[in-house]
Length: 552
Image (cartoon, rainbow, N blue to C red; front, side):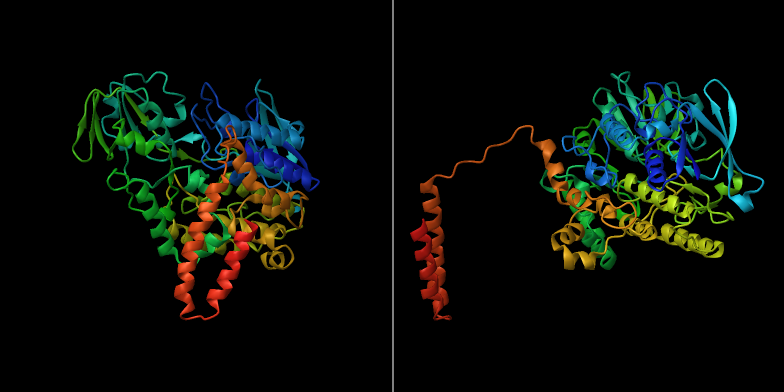
C-alpha cells in the first residue's frame, strides 16, 4: 500500500515511521530542502512555511514531548532551544531511516480522488519540484501533516489609521531577532506565546516595549516546584482524575498558585477566562520585565495616528517606531478539495480531528492539527499510528452518520469547555484524547493488571507524568524498552543539571551524637507523658533507645 505523506515536520516524520511499522510504503513530500518544519530556523522567512525566531525555547519539556519509542538523550536540556529540538528530530529520523522516504523541494499542488475512488479509495497527488516540473502519481492513502502555523493572520482592518502609521509594522511570523530594535519604541499586539516571547526579547535592547493585550492571559513558568520542569508536575493520571471530579476546586487551586508567584490582576494580565479554558502563556521572564518597567501592559489598540498609538483606555503613546502583530494564524489546506475543508464551528469537520467522515473509503487522514495541555508529538504520533491501522483495515471507523453526530457533539462540548476561536480552533483533553487513540490502536495500558503484576511500574504510570512511553508497553508496536524508559525518565530529567555536582556535607560523629541525644531527650519526654495513658509505652521506648545507643 502506497502512502503519500505531506510535510516532513515532526508530524510527517512520525507518520513515515508509523507507515513503516505497519509495512506500508510511504513517500513524503517536503517543499523545503530539509526536515523539521516549524523547528527548522530560517534566516529569511519562506512564504507558506512555518517560521520561528532565534530565541525560541520549546514550552514542553523533553520527556513530555518525546516520541514513544525514542527517549531524548539524557544530556539534552529539559526545555530545549529550537536547535536542540531539531537535533532530536534528526536523531529520530536517522535512527529509524526515515530520510530515504522523503522527496525534498517538492510541493504538493493538489490531492484529488481518482475516478474509481469508490472502488479503490485511491488519490491523484500532483506535485511540483523547485524547477517547476509537475508530476501526478496515484497513492492508495494520504496523510496530511502541514500544521497550522503557515498563514499569518494580519487583521489590519481592525486597526483604524494603520495605513497612516509612519513606522514599520509586521506580523510575528516575520520576526527573527531584536538586532534592529536597539533604542526603539515598540508595540507588540497580542499576548499569546509569540507575543510574550517577542515583547521580552525586544525589551532587552529597546527603549520601551508596550504589550497590548485585549483579553489577558494566565502566565506560567517552565520552572516548576523544586526547579523541576513545570509540565512534569500536575500532569499525571491521578491529576486528571482529580480535575474531572473536582474541576472548580482544581482550577481555583491552580489560579491561586499562579497568583502567589505574581498577582495577575496587579500586573494587568488577569484574563476573563479560567485557567483550563485556554492554553496559558508559557514565559519565564515576562513578570520580571514588567516589574522592571521594561515591558508595559496596555489594553487593545484603538487607532493609529502617524507615529502615535491610541489605546482603548484613552492612553496615548507617541513616537512609536515598530508594531509587531502577534495575532495568530489562519489555517488552510489549499491542495485539498473544498469538500474536505468543511468546518464544524471553528475546527475542521474531522472525526476525532483525523478523518473526514464523508469519504466512502477512509484513505485520507490529517495528523498533527491538534492542541491540548501537553506536547503535540505524542498526539500526532498516536494519530498516525491509528491512521495507518485504519488504512490497513485493522481498525474500523464508525458509520458516517455516527461520525458526524460525534463531531457535532464533540464540537459543542469543546466550545463549552474551552475558549475556542478562529485563531484557537482546537483544544482537547490531553490524556483522555491520548487514551482514546490508544484504545483504537490497541495499546492503552491496563492499569489494574499492571497494579497486580508490576506495581512499581503501575504507580509510576498513575502518579508520575503521563509520558508517551506508556503507549509502547503492550499491543501493536510494543517496544521492549518502554518499561525502562518510564522508570528512568526522572534520571534523564536530572542529568542536564549535573554540570556542577554539589558535594554532600560530611556528617561529623559529634553532630550525629548531638542529634541523637536531642531526639532521645524529646522522645523520653514523650514517653513520660504517654506512659500515663499507655503503661507499656515507657519500657518499650527505653529498650529502643538502649538499642540505638548501643549500636551508635
